[in-house]
Length: 254
Ligand code: ATP
Image (cartoon, rainbow, N blue to C red; front, side):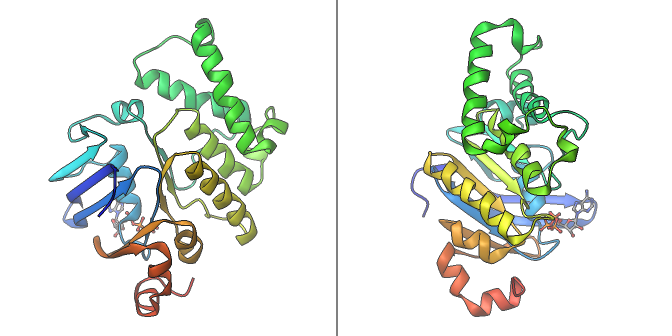
């Protein structure tokens, strides 16, 4: 059982036309945990993150965040309550600078909170923005060095840092990462995952979807294995990693 759950999901389903992509999924994420969600291509991992973010319609017997029932709550309101998704492929604004991308993460939060004027007119918000930017730069110093560079001209690893930094600008309580390793060299992924561990150590709760199963499970406190839209195993990250039958049957050799 999860101690102090932040996110609780019970009986969640997602359908695309006749295809049941997620079937009665139940899981929990505790405060301050890294939880890894692993499984083969098409298992339903991205669909689950998107359903939690509220950008994919779902049915659920239970979907709570803190004390709040998320069912029927819009994606914007979920952002405002502290849920942030870094999507697969990063979705950066390639022709904007690093700083502009980070600022976009802040606008998203402002909009979700119902403010429509620009950040800079409001001095309290301006200093909150500056403080937040400082914490992102502490985590990823290279982003400060490259603040004025166009995001599209960065390396893959740096782009992933911008995507995570942009999410952090919105002050999430739950950070969801979809395939941060996409297109990255293994060494770069390790660097990114170290930063994810640091965020956990600072108290952030993280739900991580990753094709690189061994890398994900080795930093995760707990993990869930999805296959064919269902949870087929759960446990401590290291326990799942050592289960040869499971890793061979469902997770490939990675
Ligand atoms: P991947 O890592 O390849 O993205 P995944 O585990 O994240 O895999 P999903 O992307 O959630 O899996 O997909 C689950 C199933 O739903 C797959 O069979 C996929 O083809 C299907 N699917 C996903 N999105 C859609 C969509 N928008 N319309 C129709 N089918 C979809």
